[in-house]
Length: 377
Image (cartoon, rainbow, N blue to C red; front, side, top):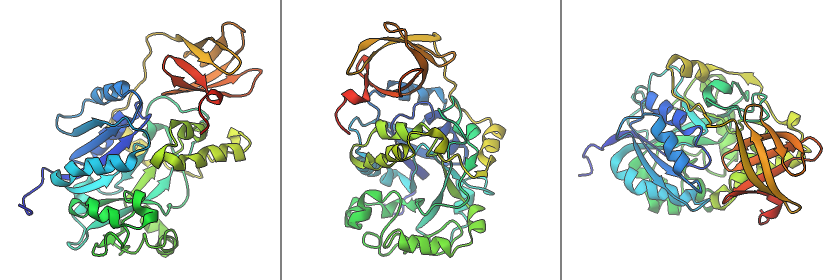
């Protein structure tokens, strides 16, 4: 039975929170480059809009396994849960986030790339290439791939991978180094995988890459020709889709496995809340923009039934209706007649009053409550 062909050759496991506007494009991209199946876990407070956006993408029946997982910050548990099914159904598995796009460069699809791997290869690492804000203060509506075209000059030492599913057992994951236990979707350590052959996207042996991270990783990366590695498959990581993402990533959740998101808000504070100091990206790179346009890749175009929406907002000093005008992103306080600008991200409302400092509101039931009223993060 062990040698029986699997249902899918190349599969992806992903967890998503506050990604409704982008999930359709992301799924369509991976279908376009030849992945056979994606296991999608929604971690939103209310999954309705997320599921609607998936249906809107018009993907073929059988391409997705979709599950709602309501407990915030349980990324590790979501991955383990998905693996119980994916490991039996898939030959190769990757863990990619919704802001991560595997750029195959000169290869037509994932099968073409994997067909060049030597027979003893069990896992291939793909380094991150960090894309930055491209100068956006607020996230523009629409396509990620078409909007963001500025990135770092060099590859990042963090990786994602494609690995033989048979190696991704819970027993091996439990044996992995404590420091990497919840990062097995990035790296596979020798403590859990002493017998695995890992290569980088050029085919160089990187089986030791995760040991004593980041020191061995930096050594191996720095001793690899960056120009060649940039022309090989890698992960384009759109982790800052606006300057406001330093706020969005923090308030989306810092629970459990998302605790690392604290660093983004700390950076916002360290830069004195000055958006102009946020990294816009050093190198122009529109390769995936061209890909998306050429393939006419699907992306969600937001539509609204009305240009204006009245919501209830509450701070420690007041509770009142405010009007959000989506035609020009203006906001007005009905009781105090205070005006300003706003940006809206899933459950997060950022209000830039004309005469007062930035206020951050988070949807709590039917009310948008000031972050100052919520439990200390």
